[in-house]
Amino acid sequence: MTTFSKKKNSVDKGDRGIYDKRNKLNELTGKEWLPSTKSVWISKKNVIDKDAFEHPAPFLLEDIRRLVKFFYGKWNISNCSLSRR
Picture 1 (cartoon, helix red, strand yellow):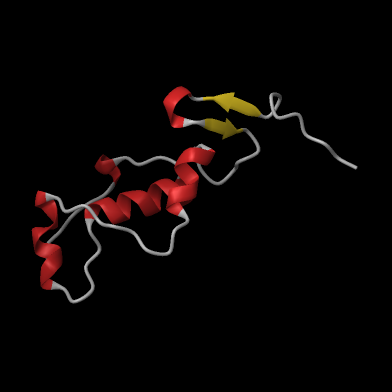
Picture 2 (tube, rainbow, N blue to C red):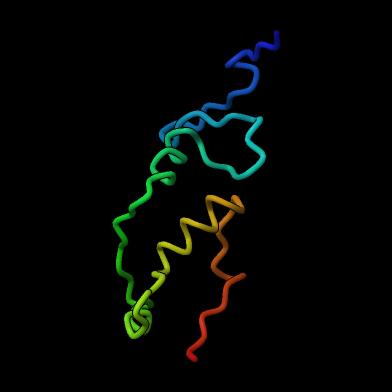
């Protein structure tokens, strides 16, 4: 039977919560990860999002940020491009 020491695999990130070193998907702590797994999100509007509402199924910048952070770990706005079509 394999057992894992919680202290050995954990890093305390202060207010962010506890990070598990075995997490290879992203850099989220358990406290940050849990809300990201909800099926319904309350989106926050941003000034940049004004053009998104011209589409019947808009993805707001905050929604995209959450998805990138969840699946890729780091969010860097300079790697993203926003263009008008």
